[in-house]
Image (cartoon, rainbow, N blue to C red; front, top):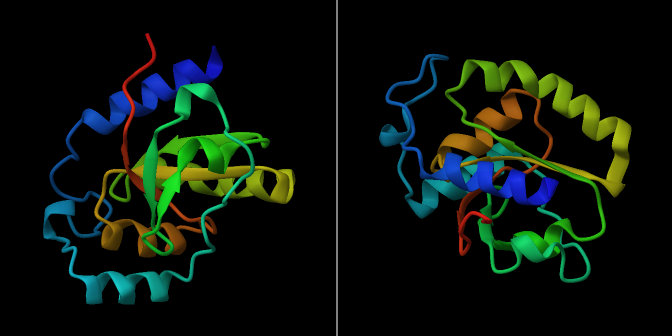
Length: 154
């Protein structure tokens, strides 16, 4: 039940367009490009760890859902990457002040839980806009973006 609620909230958030402007001084999402050279440079500068591969099929509600990993741009099978571990998916935006405020607590959560767990900020922001800011805000995990292939649980 909890997974269904989280997936529904996550997918609902993904449908909302990003807010215009960037109150934290970072560029607005519309100002960011998806040029491959820019993306490669942003990924290298962010120096994020790879997204987890996971083992097993994962939660049924997430099967068929994919996302791209900000660390390397690779497609991530969301269900498989979450299989067999506690997970916290955080709906996040680099331009969101409260999102930045909560990152230290989430980083502490990851440190306490260790490698057996995983949390990821998830966003619709272009890759160039999320990898660097996430790292600067203290996030040592790879953000995922552009989740596709699922509809909210009913």
